[in-house]
Length: 464
Image 1 (tube, helix red, strand yellow):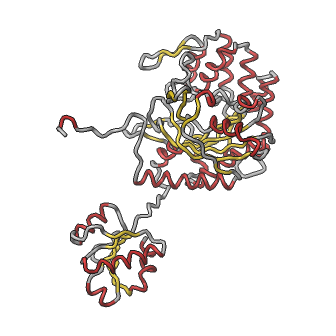
Image 2 (image 1 turned 90 degrees about the horizontal axis):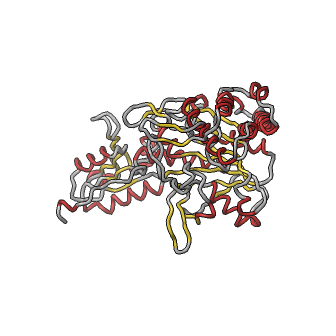
Image 3 (image 1 turned 30 degrees about the vertical axis):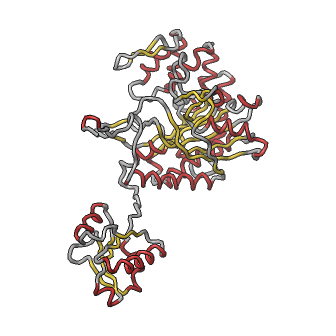
């Protein structure tokens, strides 16, 4: 191949290779998340990467003229199919398809990759792992939603975070929906209003940005224009005043319409249940979160980190919620024709990894192997006996795979890979039934010891 024709290695924007410390951390978090999902009573579900478009629809796009703009869509024979953009819509399809075989209260968890055709950056990817926990069925909603808060707190604690490093923010969509109805905002404008409110705490927005989106249009720093909901001044003003309210008592005094009062009461019930456990102080009200996805019906939750996160250039960035979700009443009824309520949360695992990579408090056990060095090819059988002995005792181990390399080059490779232990045995060791262990993290000149072969496992375990 000519030099001019050689391929340039690279990835499309929004996709990432993960390896070494980042991948070890991700696997550690996934173990903690799955352990908690099981501890809280859920069973595993796995669904395909592709779904039929009309079955799961698209709840992401903000462009009404192009509702599939934020998903990867393909033509498959006579049907359109899409790569799943979340794990909730496939759950609704699965439940509708299999509900006769499922328990009346169905708790499921799913940990899989999802795909979004959106602008990447600062912990946002176009392919990323979500870890979802959902409760489907007719339940006491306050109990179910309080359980989600308890699960978030338990999981993040097991992931290595202190309780002061994250806040679980909750609200209820009925509160803002009641206000929208009271202001007589037309149905075709309501989704834009909800999405405008949801952007309040996003970088570059604030009250002014929300006001622009509630009214005619918003122009961002690049000059791009987003069409607004075109509310009148009074409607926009009342919504902005609502966004300044911070506690349930004040909210209760200001919003008197029945639907808002119902949402407030449902939140009070959640806090009552939380008071029976140990996570009450971990959960705060935040009425500015409304969740942009249209299928949420009442309870909503977003979990935010309380420490600074920076990008690759060292600039502080807002990565958004690392665990969010809420309740949905109509998602499954699109298939069944009856309302089967559900509620759930989703951890953005790769976003969480992005943030936690910046904390030194979380220890990552890389489980690096012990290296069995090859000093002389004639002893290859003996080296493999040592290798098997280590592996049979659940010690990760590998043998150097080139008998022609000298010991110095073997140890150079071990150091580059940050291995902790090397086994170095020659004729003297095999004659004496001993083994030399080199502690690659130890003080030079004091980091080797020759021991009886019978002590190998105990001594290696002290060093790894």
